[in-house]
Amino acid sequence: MKWPPLIDSSHLPRWVVARDTIATLLAWCVLLYYIQDMARMAVYWILRPFGVELPTPWAPGEMLRDTTPFLKVVVLLVAWLVMFAIVRWRLITNRAGATSQPEPLDPQRQADALGLSDDALSRLRGASSVTIQGVDPITGRAGASIVVRTGSASPGSGRRPE
Image 1 (tube, rainbow, N blue to C red):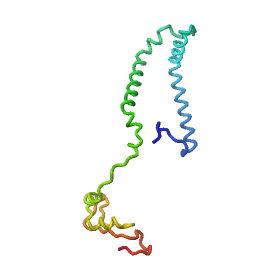
Image 2 (tube, one colour):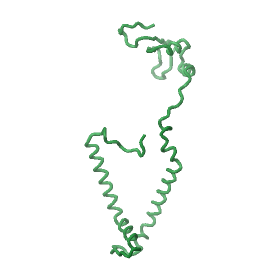
Image 3 (tube, rainbow, N blue to C red):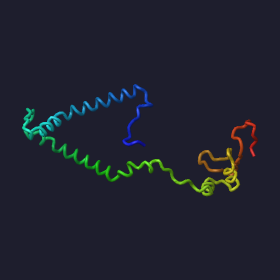
Image 4 (cartoon, rainbow, N blue to C red):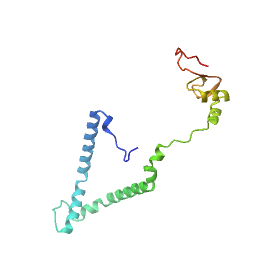
């Protein structure tokens, strides 16, 4: 898995890519519209120490006073997300763990769990192709009437099952 997980547009139809791009741009425009006063306030507070006074539509300190509860919630959420990412960084970026597979079961234990006899297991091990009949379709376990045939899986291919 690539990090960060992005949607790859190479296999998507063009209309989906265009739709997603337009929706993303519209979402950014809405966000910028809602935070335009905060952006203006940030520019004002950045330029003020340099002696640049911009005319503001609010009284000095009024915008900061009004947005303080919102900013506290934002800082709390950002701090929580950063701490979560730091604590789980190895798990999030562990490619070996994401692609690893568990160890396979011991063939004898697996055969016992599925109800296969020792004879059926030995035939399965030595065969290049196998046809198994008598497996319960619901549970996937071997029934009492299981038949294991080695050889060709398709009838009429010229090879006779053993």
